[in-house]
Length: 390
Image 1: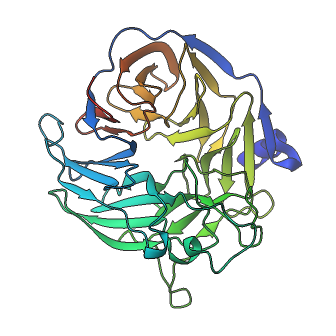
Image 2 (image 1 turned 180 degrees about the vertical axis):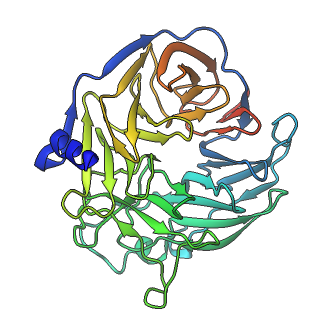
């Protein structure tokens, strides 16, 4: 009741809140390099993930003529990646789509099961405004790829799905996230078949079975995602955080969105933040915050939540001369937030309560857009894909 009353007072009948004046800090990065940073040479890298259970590093990259997924074994003592990749994999497409580049937007290991989830997209002609059964992207392209992973880093594709006019394509931003407690896999850039216009984007999730695969039923042999009924411009689903049984927070154009799964009156509460375009969202297992970055801006934010419902104003940190390119990464053992910029990785110290301080480390790297960043809590290492060592 308190939560519902708070949201009603805050966003009103329009389910929208504009936040124009968050609590602000400014910081000038020191010359101290980011501690425990490991640079991994993977040209064209776009995304990265670490398997804590199997000590593996996965890096996705744009490689039109090569293999877009690279797997490294990690030394359990030092955290260093293997000299040579354990596996390199070309993401699948179809014969009708060979002329168009497909590329990974996000990779995630299941936190418990030996599975790797990959969300891919394709640089095909623009999406039609109406459903077109002859469009080979809708007929033949699967966005979600699920790989079985062995301890030596070898992987095998075991399921591919998420195709059809309900899934947007030709996007450059989008994330997936796993809620292992409730068995949900959140996805970006969905479309409603009832609102097939280029600007109508939504998010959704697959309910996972105990084996980590999208659940099937006799009535629905092809898994069907639960899709949010509110829409934003493409791209949307730029990171998910604060997931609970009732709600999740995700990033979108100009705002963070609270998706309340079963509220038929107010399905989405949008918290618009002034001076931002694309806003990413990252959750934390340590603090009741979501950490947000404004892509192509010098700003990062943090905002408290209660069970997936945002509360109070955000704290905003402006870092001099920065242009953020990645979602935030929580370095739990070091109590820091890492963010990739233009040829730079930043690490921001948090206080004891999980809020930003003005202590900022920086490491120059050879990555025009440092977006392939992942942290291992077990190894206490921050990995970043680079074009070359610097």
